[in-house]
Image 1: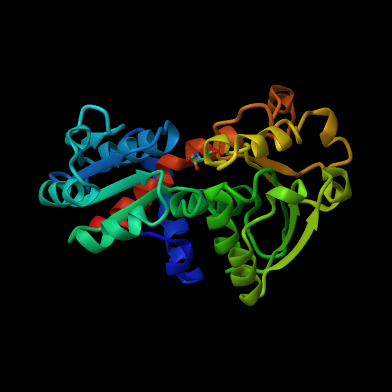
Image 2: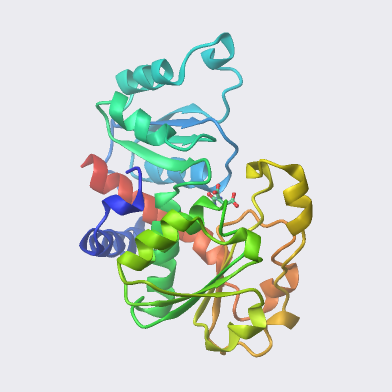
Length: 297
Ligand code: NCD
């Protein structure tokens, strides 16, 4: 599971139905992966992705090994990425990998016999987050087709946005891209999703698009991915969603965010009926239970 581009709409529908069933077992557990081992190889920080994968595996009766930073592993002694993956492949039935370099998960998938799940590589792909984002929309709105979806923030470096756009191109939706000029998505992604029929419009200000939207997806500025610190300074603080700025939104607009938030999503939004991002994060467990059960059983 390296890229959203590897998945069809039918695959996602199967996944969503399974995740909906798994919601019943997020506390009680379901013993379908007893004796199976998942390795987490996280070379980059994570809270939700790693912990929801681990929780999902444990709720399914499986076991977890791995690391949450290269510190403390033989990478510090100079071991290569390939050798590390080879070892995990020998120990585990599935490998979940996160890395700061684009293409790391693809490389891992080429090396390993076991299935590899990309939990984020550089600013490129984060397919399981996109699945979770799509699931949240499907779950909260009852459908994806026919919706108007705004995506606001750092559309250039946020890997969740790249994967989400690829996933949305499987549905009949209209997209408003809201960002400073400089933070528009990479051209290759735009070409790809438009060739698949996704309708896109670009805005620089939220007010221009807000009134029409059913979903507003916000991402933080991905400070760590900027090549030039001066570029970051130019766009820092350039957008911020507050309860006030949501006046004029549809009553049933939902606000999503992959989290973590920094300053682009104000805590005042938490108290509005629009806030759906904590439920979104919670769906991470049933969604990943569904994924792991489909991959391993
Ligand atoms: C995202 C990521 O790591 O790309 N976080 C996540 O997985 N929920 C988003 C981000 O870091 O901004």
